[in-house]
Length: 30
Length: 561
Image (cartoon, rainbow over all chains, first blue to last red; front, side):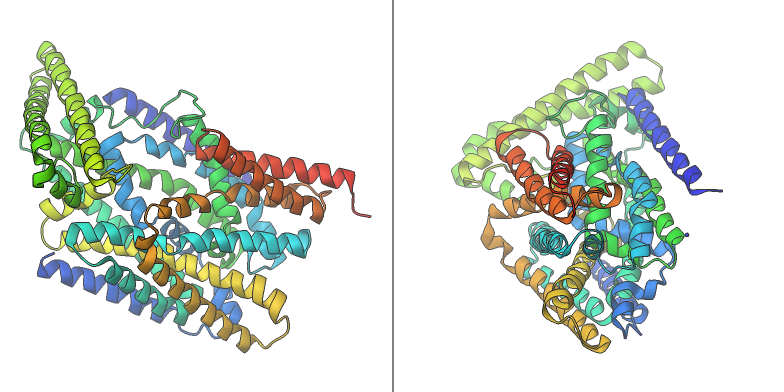
């Protein structure tokens, strides 16, 4: 088998950013 | 389909088969045939995971869904990255270190034979029910659009996957998945740019976004919690996470992809890449559907996109009732078109009062079009006796065949074939693996040479590929039962997830506890299905919780001596 936990946290931050981006996208054009 | 389209489609399919045979050569032991000798790099596994998940109907239906219902379906995938992180931290290292061919083999190492057998039988039923549908579903859409006989289409798709899957095993499946995923992504990008390019001169891409957004087509996030609503942020995050945990952690058709990794790290990376790429990909597919909606603001769409239904509405028996609906539809279309042009012009001129007036007319015309389409659909259902009709699956391909140039149509039909073949080949390959490892080698012939098991694996692959084609050939005779068959398959994930959660995290749970937990979990899911209106995304949560609670209770009452 830097570290895997760092990668996992980065993925979750990425997910949160993606949801925030989609929410902004939804609000901007609705 | 014009000659150039046939060249593109035929060339693509031939390349897939030849590439599969080339990459699959040398699979001359069971370990190579079923696990590629654990030599796969992360990017091949990642694209194979995504290609196996993306069936043809995902591609056809998702674009149509955005046209009709907007982009809220993307929330369904919000739980996937969370599930991938959990699986990377738990399932991947445990499966790899247990040195197993199948996820269910792991259950015997952790619990006992009966738990492994029950889980593998559940998988064979669940996946066996669905395997032919991956071929049948796109074939019936292509039959309506092009008039191709659906039996011929399923025979071609099934025949091609049989050639490279039987010959090359999982190496052929994985590398053709990579190729098919690249074809799918290229097709998507080409379709997107073609649609934007075909918008009228005065309508910019930004105008298109405002026009789609004004009717709610770009609503990608719904914060309201509702148990009965499939698509909101919370059902996506929680229900979607449980569904992804079940699918990627307990379904051999996905587990087998990342068991072929050359190291634990490579397998983890394959799941984590999927975690980052899947949501943008689905967003892209839905966005193409939303842009098709904008395109049809300026180009009159067919009243219904399913040509067989349209022929019925135009037949002498029904046309008298349909004529007023159609003429109102045409008026509403013209009103919507003028309002859309007015909105774009007002936005460019920064004329806020005209923009607000056009927006009100635009929304009113859209509501009228939706109402008329509903009336027309009901008229079709009454006259044909068909219930639950919808034309979502026909929208994107109708657009493609009527408006896109030669060559591009062939590419997008190749995308449909590639998506159908990539999901079917993964299913066939995994069904054969479970048949050989969890049934044949475990219960029928525990001792034999590697060469014997290799040939049994080839035979099992040929059997499941033939079964898929046979099922697809006769699926039409099932009629509306086909929906029930598809639904039945989705009711087994919760209990499988529950037993793997017990295996990974609850050391004191016994084999009997896990076995009884699976049975009770399955009963709970069927009860939720029959007696409640809860969205199917929550079934996995219910099943999983019941399995864990039962497993813990039984193990506490009857601990291992």
